[in-house]
Length: 133
Image (tube, rainbow, N blue to C red):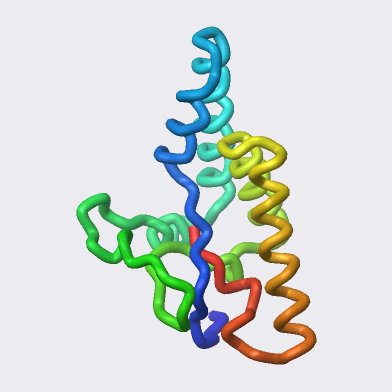
């Protein structure tokens, strides 16, 4: 198990993102987009261990889902450091299906900036593996 101090940013992916993307699509595209997101999510879930799936689940009523800040703090969900390379690739496929190429590229850029900050400062609060799904 990888134990490190949690840091600030949370990677959010879920039905709200897919619904926002679907809301801007033409009616014929809505079904395809929703299906693409569902297939990508199911593919990721099928690849994860049962323990990781349980770790990543949060009840919709859980007030911790609404805690949003960039300070060092614990998070609910599944941290990136728990995912192997194959799982991370499936996560990016999910994000691309939900956010589009541009949105996923922006998320990758933010993580790349955090990685550079972490490498140059060794400040654990900038660790790019502390994004959560």
